[in-house]
Image 1 (cartoon, rainbow, N blue to C red):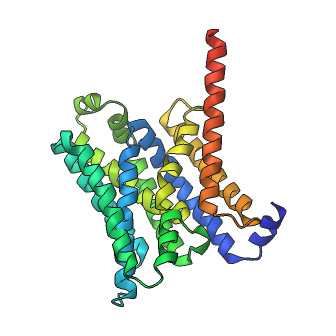
Image 2 (cartoon, rainbow, N blue to C red; image 1 turned 90 degrees about the horizontal axis):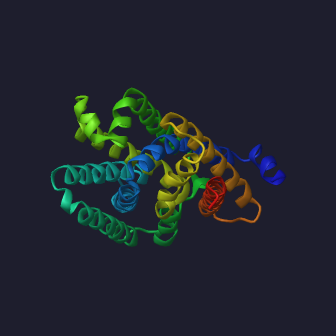
Length: 284
């Protein structure tokens, strides 16, 4: 741990990694709380895997066709928002086919991404980076884009807090209050899509769903309101990303995987302890 602290003061890539973890944790805590409350983690999973298609396409056109202004993160944003809109519209207008569309997007996005990456020089390196994340390779440009997306997520969550709260907890009540439930559900899915993009750079596509849900799930054991849940989830996410980086540094472990293992262990321990306390209180 001391070695990591000393290295942070010397190496800019570690400073960028810590800053990325902090920025991503803010959106993770806010949107993750919505995802857990609304129970749409499966939708977030489909969006996260569909993102690979956009990232692979952006990388392909950048390297093979010389589109220098197109970066994988740009492709991730476009594909994530596209997946969110498709899922939202199907959910609203053809609810019985929602699971089929989600499964199709999940598989098609991954397959398209792999095809694009297979035709791009540096295939193996890029595939591993996209699937499992590489927070240590984040650039200042990536941080700027992540910060901008972060600000957008925060602003939307603040401006429409009550509407999104109503949509998450009670759609019928929201309709009685005159809230356009379908519109705000689409907005929530788009927020989730942007958060997926933020977290792909931290832990990769395979594990992004865990970092969205686990901090919020842990926070749910300690809070009773959505606002407090968001705050506590953000704190837990910051702790997980920071400790994950610190623990993985000396033994040269994958940072993303270390972060998720730490979050997973914490969730399991908190869940078991909570259940144990409940059992003791009820005498069962």
